[in-house]
Image 1 (cartoon, rainbow, N blue to C red):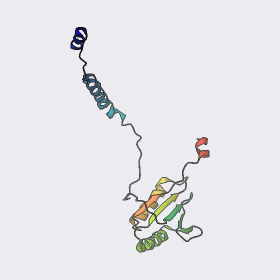
Image 2 (cartoon, helix red, strand yellow; image 1 turned 90 degrees about the horizontal axis):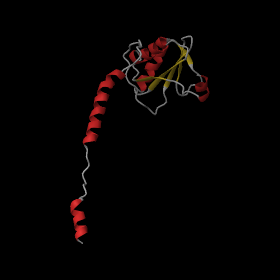
Image 3 (cartoon, rainbow, N blue to C red; image 1 turned 90 degrees about the vertical axis):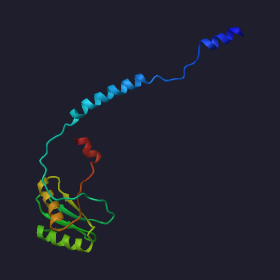
Image 4 (cartoon, rainbow, N blue to C red; image 1 turned 135 degrees about the vertical axis):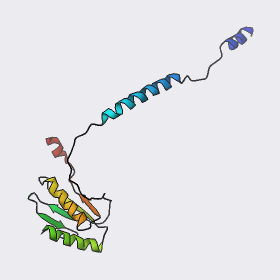
Length: 152
């Protein structure tokens, strides 16, 4: 019995965790991230056209679609039409303005052909927002198909 009591007195269990090494590692990582973060700002300079465009909000209404063909001609499609109607810029503004007068929250999308100049599509988008007073205007696109992804 005397032997077992001596053993308990000599070896007490220590239940504390030594956190000093964890703090050291954390501080080293903090310094590394603070030094490398400014170096990660790598980008490509792009000269984008300027406009008074506003951000687009999602809507459940059927939108008006303005199509810009590869030769720059404009077509207008809206609910109830069988095929797109070819219009000039002034006709486009007049017709879309009439739709906006009846429902100001109606979304309008611009669908530009892949071969059309980006500036042309952006001018149509800007024209809709500034002259036709469209509050919801955005760009349309097609998702990448698996067959297209394999070709690249």
